[in-house]
Length: 146
Length: 83
Image 1: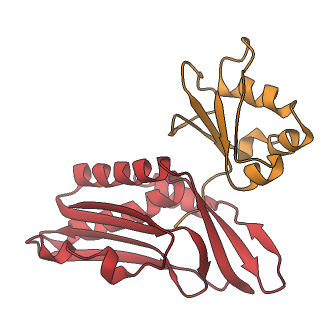
Image 2: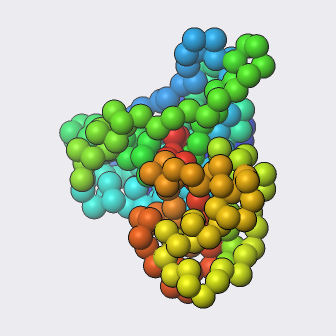
């Protein structure tokens, strides 16, 4: 099972991961990224590149299937305005044994951060907003999977 | 060629996409950026620091020296920040 979904509506881990536990494996691992209050941020806004986003996420899942013994994987990502406290992204993987699902989950979120065409803007309580800069720590985490 | 812009690049230029007939001497993305930077003050602002730009040709990430070839769509955007 391979699932990629870009959603303009609120997402939940439960819906994003639905079915991963029914694939006959002994392990489901997941990561949920949540919109965070970084110094007065009230909401974030996510822009994406329609078409390329879905392609790049499915390519990451295909690569994960090539590297680990997976039974299923899912990536669900919000776009548009996301209030602080709401999920931005859910990544999950299912496998027979835990190591494959755990490593694939880390791979998927690390590489999503550097490879998938999303851009994040932070909105502040005073009405201002600013585009978020890419972090070199994200590049470091992503490159360890090279 | 269809050009598409995202995030701060889109805001600086003021449009999300445009179609341009690139001159014959424009062979790679580097050439295209240099030519596009002369099209308006917004383009110049968006493209002033190539090290802070990323590119996709027909929805595939490529480096600055990639040849345009017969690609239909060039996307220009800041480093991605999803997740």
